[in-house]
Length: 429
Image (cartoon, rainbow, N blue to C red; front, side, top):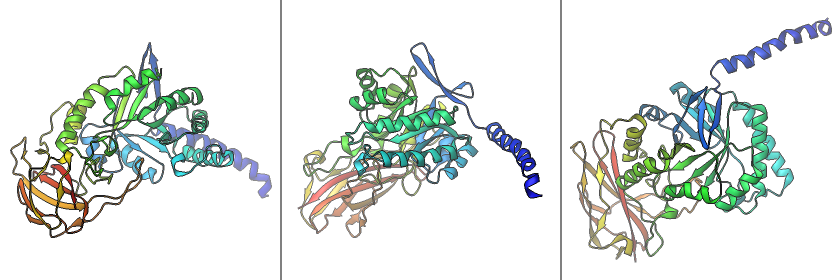
């Protein structure tokens, strides 16, 4: 009796499967495409032009929406449903990363078995998320070029992008590069024709991206996958090798200049950008790339993005701070202090809204984490007992007793959730 009715049951279920797919599509799955118009390229979502006003990060999505952003970048599918559901709830789109193995971590792209296993794993991720209504684009690997010598990685990228096009005709593919490595760009053009958009992660070098692409003879569409303050890898160094970090004010000024000239200024082929990092992240220091403090206080970079994404100045702006000085020494020449000795540090700060400012100073060990490519780093502990008097622009403090590299941090709060940050490295010997 069961066998007799099984075909009828299957016939009844088959239309329901088709209906389920239609429900997924009609519930908001977006059709995204890159259109070529002469020598120009534009991104379209459901038939309307779409310039990516995005940020990379996993928190503060409400702020991104409030400040005029429209898209989020995620680096992998781990926990992605939660983040994508939140983005969709707010009307944001997502460029979703497919996390491919890196040569710098020991993966061998000559190992056909390992490459095939990776492809099968990633195919499942594609099938799981291809109909999500927040999905904008697929990020096929992140900075696979970093310290990589094996160009077979781009064959693997192409295989995955080809599968995506076969099962998902609604969302373009991209892959993110660390800067614009000309030899890798040329290999991608040869080996990975299934990649629709090239993504470049560029910071201090951002204004030169277009020129680099021209030298590689890449004439297609691109987006800026990560950008923001100058990284530790491209900043001036002290004699002992510690990088000199920009103040939050200098970062905001650079971000404003770069957004106008290198992103908004190239609408013919640049499809938009994802500023980095929309949240808090330890990267040699806890303030270098973070647009927020751990406490949730916002830096001036957010003010810049709100201005350009909405076309309006923020109602309340972050304080503006000058670099920290220690005694009469110049930071770039190296500030050397004797163990346990007493010193003065100073800065100047103003608030565009004339808010009352509150100052907080602290000393940290210089981070010994030397991770690359955004790998997770641990924040060092602050050192207690060194601040003698630090309630304003001037600070009295003692050098630590133990020789080694340290860093003095300053946070200036306006009492309305905005903050300015600065720090200065020094060495005890």
